Image (cartoon, rainbow, N blue to C red; front, side, top):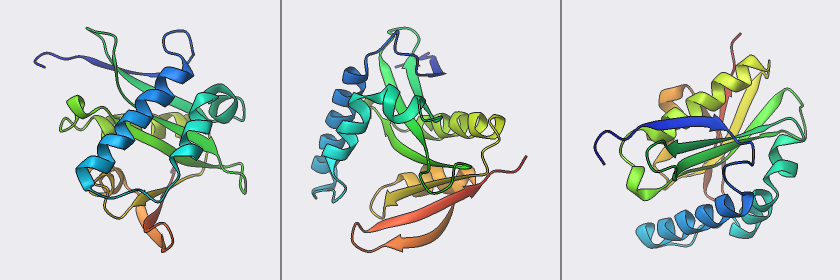
Length: 168
């Protein structure tokens, strides 16, 4: 994969269907289960329900969804979504960050989340929250380098609770 160019854009539904994204997310999660040799406690079903109706879940309530794509092949390389927090309309929840295995090791996840942060700041949101499994590498590779801080722990799901305060 030499000279791969990646474009990160907001989801608009014209290039990729929500079903394609949901299926890709499911395949990535199943690969993670194999790689980590454990079952994730966070429900795949919830993820799939959100993604299959991406427009209604993310875009219409005021959030957004970002797609990284290989500009040479037009294949999806990764994605993440921002959901408006149901408790505070000035807060977003970062959800469904995923990078296709062939594109890992190139800081793509960090670039996708950075693009989402830029959008959130431009829209005057005040904070981004997320949860990430303690076994997942995203905490050290993506979230902490971008300024997210651990603010708690969900013992049931064995997740870090993290936040980023958005400065304007």
